[in-house]
Length: 520
Image (cartoon, rainbow, N blue to C red):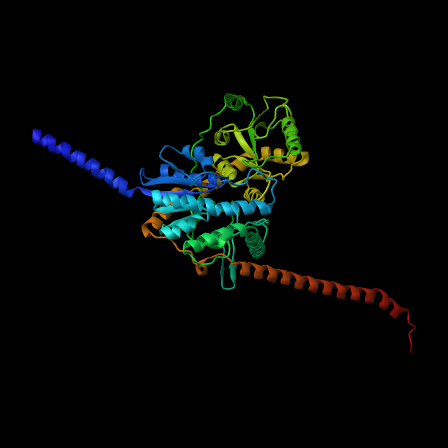
């Protein structure tokens, strides 16, 4: 009997050890790379989905980003490793710098920081897969030299990487400023190709410092293939996006290069909720409007005061406002039962609160995603960059309204009244869109990650396989459109001149003909 018990215990221990060994063997190491800026919040749900929404222990995640974002990464849980590689400085907070300065800094940073960080991580703990946010192109050098599969995480708002040229048929996904519901498709495609071509030309101009660094490191590492622009590099590797229609417009998606997973679940709120905020929400007898211009943008003092005064005077919503530059002495609140303004607000908590029904937002992509997942209606007040496109897409999808960059009292009044009047319909639309965009998203991500890891090896950068346009193609397209537009304009001018001559001839010369004496 004793022998039987001893054997049973040994068998159980053996099974436990074997189980742990199997668990270790199947736990795949995924490195997620992103700059320490607003784009980090695009990739956080990817890490959360892999760790919390798939089979326990299937993946382990290392976050590769700046040390200034260590706390954000640690909020995901103790099992998420932050690979500390110093500060990753990006000039997002300084909105006064020029576009040229912004792109020069951010594109140099997107090469140096990811390259150095991934190089050190590969020496310490080589990952089975690198998922790099689309600006972190420096990670591609390590992927090639270390033979690691690479997956680019596309960030909505920049021109879509599924753009490609196939014979004479142009199929483009790019941000554009036309209403997809009322504009014919051929006009949409034409506008998209022009916007996309111009962006490639501007990107090539502004990104030269970063491109020079990228090319220098590639040559030093023995990777001599030249490239045309950052998009050219990104689109030659497998890539995916969590955001598709109706927020990010796509015309055609080639399955061999691009995967649309759909919206991934976000981690729960980790920021402490102030008692005064809890009390305000619980005691509000009206629906609540949440106002936030995001992490980096704020209204000017003049616009802030104008919007604040109107929101205090209206009676349809109570207001919670997140404003990082708020001063109680400069902008005192008249009635604290109707409005609360804090420098920092736990946004997920607020948006998901049952009393909060609407969101006055700059429509940055992270805010749009959080608003969608919370089921609130939108008032769009875009402040810069891709926000104008995203705000227009939100409005065209019936998820809310646009009130402009610097809303005045008439636009605020019209927007608030219409939003309140149609609040239930907007909310229903938001819920339906979120359900559509998040369907089976985790499973799609898991399948994509598993397929790349099982194949193994890096997808080498090959300019001939890239689906993106080159600088020459972009320039040629813009010139062709300009020549076509000029030809049409000259033809119209000629037509108008001919009509004018005919009209003058009819008005003056026909009258003279009538005055001539008739002859037998």
